[in-house]
Image (cartoon, rainbow, N blue to C red):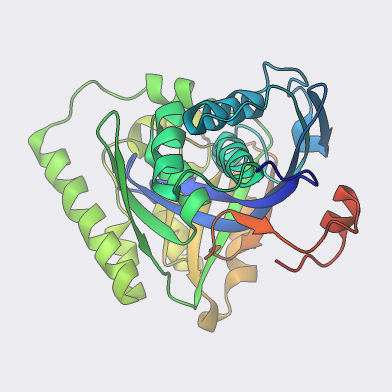
Length: 322
Ligand code: HSE
């Protein structure tokens, strides 16, 4: 029942909220982490890449904990595991690094013992850990998701994004924890602001589902969290207002930040101009940042099936066929 040779998975990064869809919308991105998991005599972690600095390498690692949740839920005893992980997803920048670790740990553990749990159960478990379904839903299912969490069950619908949609992220060189970015939010909103956000988020989900890229600029506006978080991310407010003049369909804080993302239409060929604008705006605000031109990831977490002949790191370096 336990796969002796172990399993490998690839997990996409994600962006949450997309502006108005606070704690409900997410999108998987073509930026990845890879994980290998095997049953072992002793728990060990091999963490590779700059993004893994400072992550614990003992049983306090979140991946060990989530793997044990799967084994317990399935009634299978796998007390010791060997885990290798490499990630290109920057930590604590609003690109779903912790969600990728949770989803990767759950999916790898479930695959290791023969897939006893359905994906919907993994989604419930991931959301219970993360407390919001937006990043974990995107990393698990891929594409764009709209999701609801009632405290025990998570529901999710997936939207396949328009094939011309591209995503430019500008990642500041400082970390911002989700808890700090939530502390600045007000305890209540006016009815006017609530209506503002409900109408934009429903329009955004429908526009994305119908490929109505022309509506994204209007639909990505938000009054629930971004105005309160603006002081935490210098340059953000200006980008949200002016990015459309430089080729963006719309722009938003990525999750709880500090990364800012802009959506663009590939057919317009303005991603270079837009990227320069995003970096220059951050720099003018005193923030060093790096930009990545990404696409939506459509698949979510994937089991990598044909690579046991390659070492974990060679698999990542090489052309991975999934
Ligand atoms: N939606 C969350 C927030 C972040 O903006 O605080 C991701 O779960």
